[in-house]
Image (cartoon, rainbow, N blue to C red; front, side, top):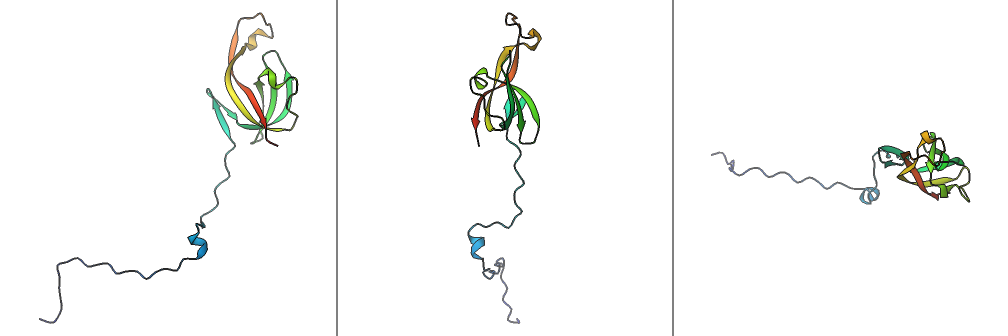
Length: 134
């Protein structure tokens, strides 16, 4: 025999030398790329996707509700129907940024052309709340 010692036991892995860790790494600092900007906040109202936050361009009292022209965080301007109470007596000031609350509501049908005696109705997404953010 040559003095070699053999064993049928599996080899044990070698222990690695300790690695120095900087204080910023220990405290949870990340070296990954910054997160991409968040998409504009939207809400699902029935089958419709609507902005959760928007700026008021204009308001006008109408026959089906308060017509609100709004601009969302992507810069898209739309005209939406809002609850009458949001137009009168004090509508939100133009340019104000609002958190919007939506609900599906039944309103006088557009085909009625303002005739309050018309029995037809449409089901639409409606702004039922507007909380100022600025």
